[in-house]
Length: 159
Image (cartoon, rainbow, N blue to C red; front, side):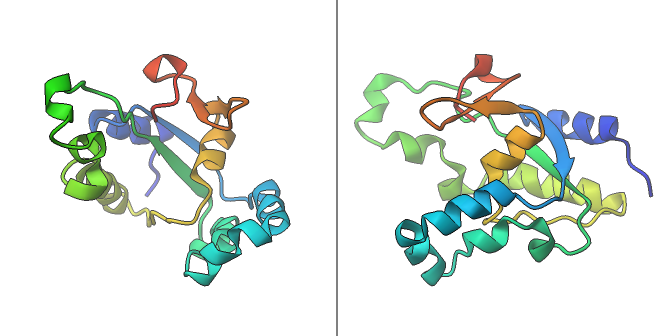
């Protein structure tokens, strides 16, 4: 079933993502070359089971992939009262990796939407996410190597 990019964008924004973009499932050659050149620094990551180099080729993750859909999450949507921060770390107040009740639920809903339209998807941990976002035209890198969004958080890096 054909699904237009406009409908995919609409669904992503409806689910609360800050931005959405599309790029090819071509290899991230420059990222692979960078990682290979820094093997002494990143070798331990691969030995621990996180194969960053394999992630530079989306076809190793999903051989039938044609495109990558990039969803941008805005991490700073609300401020917390300063008097609360000394009781709990900011990370634990706002980090879905701990609570699994916001971002993960929206990703599941988005993937269900794709599946309902006949599209298989994966959420790979080892794909170069920032490179995919840049290649999709969603932002660029600053001199500090942070990714800066074009359309969300006033062009900031809280994505």
